[in-house]
Image (cartoon, rainbow, N blue to C red; front, side, top):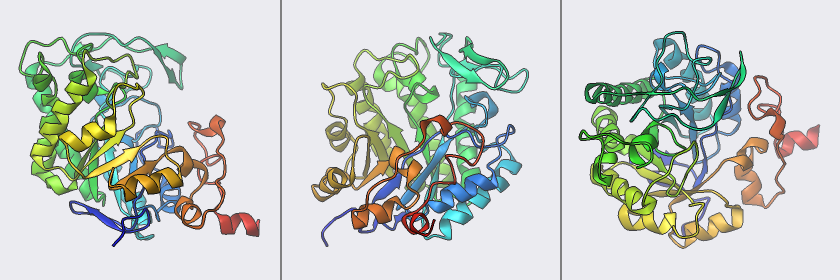
Length: 359
């Protein structure tokens, strides 16, 4: 059978009804306690005809919370709240995984509950600021370096959160390995100055993410675990002495664990071909991301560059994106002003083609 965007595929135990993936997007619609809301269930359910939805980055423990109104997957209440979301997606025949995102040094004490620490691979403060609902823009907090024992505890927490995600009805989990969050803080030479087994050369700096993947796989099965990477990424004040080589090392370790897929973003720097790097060091089970439209995504899948392609911004204003791509219909634009607000506007009020005609 010819491989197209609209043919089903399989990543480990995760079944995709088509190869159009909704990428994870922070939207800040959870409650202050990190509970997914009925509005979030409606939002994700509207987009449930995607082959796979990667739900937004969620903290596995509260030290990893980065943003106001960011969901978590640490408590029993959060598990119950996410169940509404997974039920809504499954009712549409879709599959959904949860992205586990420990923010590390990215955050503020104005966001986290009182007394919660900010931690990282090393005690190096990130340059930059973050929005807080109570105090406006604030500098990132200086982090405390995790001890070796604490690193192992955070890894174990990732495994526990993976199990909670399965308990909430998710089809799997994806480890957030980019954008300057904790996994990348361990991976990058600029943010990892450790002298234990989690610091030093690239193999050691990749160990934190690899051990998270390994423990998550031991808990829920490697065939339900994915990883997102972006070689060359410098977001949130991270950099690496040789980003391509460092990411290749982590890709090889992830492939050795046998995880279901690698979700790889196009590199922002011309000297790195992230997709070719991923095929060489991880294999064929790739979700490609960034800068695709329907035509280029179809060409990439047909050429075997990746098994699926993910879209972020196109899914914001187009809950029926799969239909629009299949039928060659025009795409609606989205409102940037409502990306991170706390209401339904710009979140659940975008219309599908049929609804738009009726309106």
